[in-house]
Image (cartoon, rainbow, N blue to C red; front, side, top):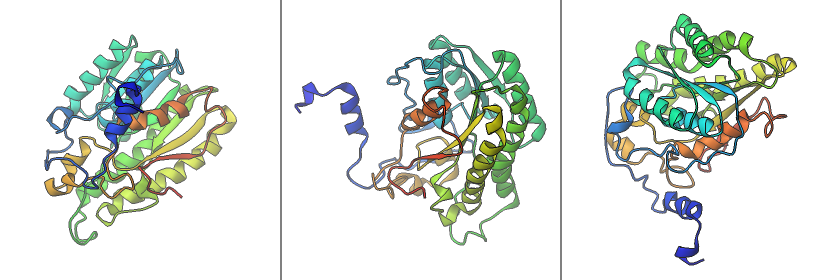
Length: 305
């Protein structure tokens, strides 16, 4: 097909496919938790490309880690599909969170900012309370906030109590407390979506503790689906592969960022916008009405079985 005759969406898809197997990011580092504006290149969250089709009209969603990365892409997509969104984030990410809120409001939806560090159970409960009050209810909970720390050399020697504790409490404990706090507010047709990882299936040694938490998230997703199914609440997960988010330059060495994602069959990392569709599908009470207890892999070709 001649280049001029190709639809914009086809040209965009072709431009995102790397063919040199080198990843393609300039070497860079940030202090955790990292900010979007300091990344090179700036990630694509769907700001210019996501077109809503009213699949979530009138629904109310709480998205954790929604200041940047996958969470921002999900918040944008949800808003353009008709949902109001509560944005959970760390206080250090205020700048990014306000930009996400601006994009949600630009879509004509209500945006509620609910800051707090989810490693604390009381904060998880308060975030849910603030989201419900700000939105006037809750229909969708997206447990997306996550943390990892890539290590050099021996995986055990590189473990520190601080990073392990944060990884476990952010990636697993917080989901338990958020779900417990949110469950009384969720009714028939509601949805919980957890963020797992390809690491649950194909773990990397430098991410030993992170990979273990994501395997636990898969197990928890299945158990919650069984427990909440009789109430009409669906529980699923999305397992991303490597995704270009602030977490990467904030927790990896500069030289590792340079080749980030090159190990996938597609030879590149995903942009956050490429994950949003899976979350929209699982959140939709019509399209995914009989989908519960499953994990959707968006991994660039790496296996999730």
